[in-house]
Image (cartoon, rainbow over all chains, first blue to last red; front, side):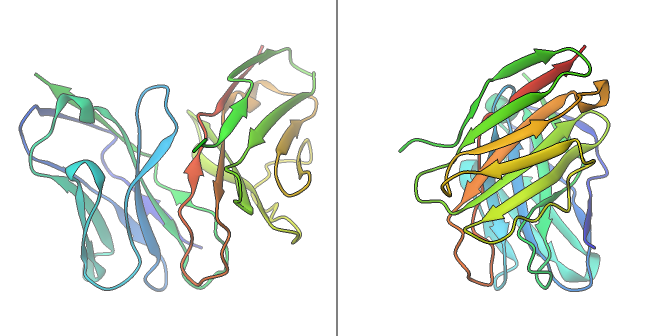
Length: 115
Length: 117
């Protein structure tokens, strides 16, 4: 079975600073990888996804993520954080060989943005 | 167009009572998922419907939980004899449900916050 680890429960950055949120997965092959964002009182919104091909993927709101097979990682990055980016971020996977379509989520990283 | 909607947005119930949570997926989406988000367990999968196929119930935590999907559209999640540990936000998602190898994007509703007192 696949699993996802987000080692950072809470991160605080200053507005305008760069951001990197860590995600490590465990799966016997390359899974399908996702990053979701959940703003207070809102549902989950897909930021970006990786299925295959170019290991650097671009998403919405200026986010990008890089898949590194050797490290089993899919870290999310943003060059310059805005106050509106304060939210909880979830990394998720779908196993590529299970036929099961449900997402397995990490525990989430809460991002706080200081002015 | 309209997104996934869920009702009620909040539900407070007494321990031992039954509750029903409703999900209206995006029109034309044949796949529907229920997830639960709680402080202790994070975001976890509950059940998955795909067209007319038998649902994947592998995530349901106990036989007190059940779900149905009528007419391939609206879904109801029922929790019988609620317990305090059932307190959580219940999220519904839908997707196109194509049979491609890669999974379709799941679109999430705002959730129902269930509080069991």
